Length: 190
Image (tube, rainbow, N blue to C red):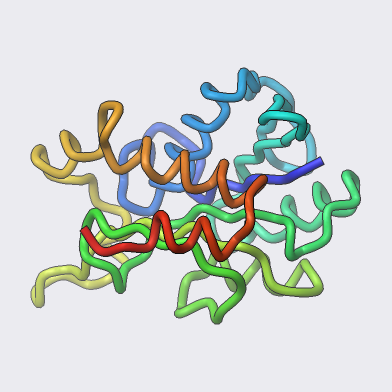
């Protein structure tokens, strides 16, 4: 069993915000792997599907970002998935919009979802970092991540060549392929 976690905040208010890009990517992986996200447990929504020969679980914590690790820790223990095989998809404030990177481990960089996961798992996860860009100088970063993408960015997220699709393919590759090869393929700056 492999575990993919999309980070975000629950509820319609946050649905298309920058902080919820992890949910959107995980939902695309669920679509591609035929995993219906229709089960509830551990304060999360999840579903299971297949990716090649691997069974995969896709988890969307519903506890708000700063408590995401509770659901992730419980799910990882239930399925006996070690931390280094958990793939976490999250927004990355320090990357320009559109930049994507797969990375094993690393610090939380002030990201409360990652901080919570580190508290509930022993070891580093694999991360798929999706660039949302820095806020303009007049914006507070907390308000920025909870704001919606502008029209051009929303368009760039969609479609078969969009950022969500690329991030979903990176996440699926990170679950089943050699991580160094995956990083070489997806970490090139666009």
